[in-house]
Image (cartoon, rainbow, N blue to C red; front, side, top):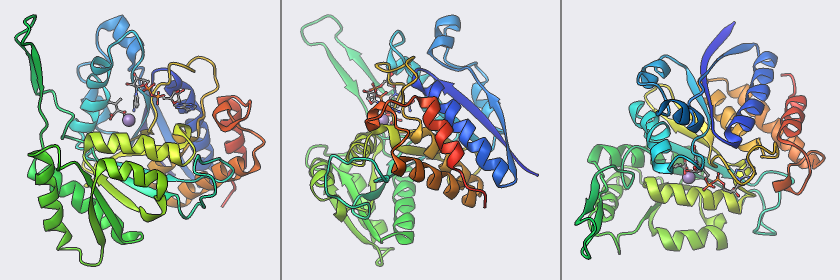
Length: 354
Ligand code: NAD
Ligand code: IPM
Ligand code: MN
């Protein structure tokens, strides 16, 4: 039987609850489609940090290296500064495994309300291709003249030619397989080194793809367009920080953070890719068992696609659609009273045999 070795890192807060439900759905999908997911769970989290002083063991990256995929819950919880927890686990994994594409597809799921009332599912379907390995997320910089009136901090960004070219090329290739429209989000009117450089490389690569209708947009105007004219958007490519912000916005306009999945992809497949929800550990609702597990389940479907189990991945998405459309089992963010576990069980039960 086809067997895949999967690392599970539930992490913090609601990450733990939604990962349990995703595993339940994925195991059932695997059994219906004649393959097996063999899970190894890692307790890397803020709780581990409190116990040991580190988010993961020193050889953590080496321990993940041999897996076929990684399913991550969420990282970060009050008590540990966010930059400590995230730079202690999530960001090092993305970088060590050259997961330079952060793919964040959004679509309007059936039965869910968009804040953009009246929009059809066709109008609200886009994918954000976020640069995931460099850019504004940088540890270079520091505090100067500490304690003096002239105190200041410097925070550097790093945009390498290799890094910018590969993410833009990935986005063009993806646009080719879809509607053939690509928008590059920058802020070249404000940031005078990094963003004009990105635009320059974007224009160079655009010349290689005359069949793709590409445009360069200012990220601020793009944010407004995402709300007012989402139908004009298809693939969006953006730097690490802009892609991060745009993906929460895209999630919000298509029904909420509880339903937006994300894949940290290493395109050559030399290293494992990692799948997670766009959302975080949601401390405001953690421990209540009421988080929406759909985002994590759909991240699991992205992982199945990545493993080549595309029929099972589609079955998972169809099961999610069926449950949401029926509106009988819905978590509070969807206007219902169901628990995380009940929604996970409903999706599992809605999986159809091939
Ligand atoms: P968040 O995404 O955790 O929560 C934002 C809001 O969305 C909250 O009101 C929350 O209740 C709601 N929400 C999120 N997911 C939901 C779900 N599945 N169902 C229902 N409601 C949901 O963002 P935040 O509060 O800014 O961050 C909390 C912590 O998570 C921080 O430590 C942050 O650094 C971390 N974080 C981690 C990741 C990750 O591991 N990939 C991503 C984002 C944030
Ligand atoms: C995400 C998160 C992370 C990011 C944070 C927690 C570092 O917001 O995965 O979207 O910005 O990459
Ligand atoms: Mn984010």
